Length: 80
Image (cartoon, rainbow, N blue to C red; front, top):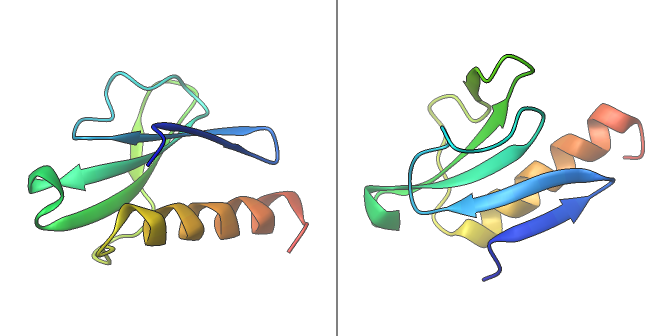
């Protein structure tokens, strides 16, 4: 899987762990426990704050998490 994606001009990064290095405004698909425990979806706010978009819901594969992020972006920009 590629580590960088773009959808509707929004940056999405697939990372093996921390989202701390991602730029403000970007989205992340982050491995939990190296991916063995699932994948989470995060958004980096304008001040660098990380928001977990899935709450307690995690994805089995990075592809599932990436699809979820793309659906969220579509909803955000009104293209759903």
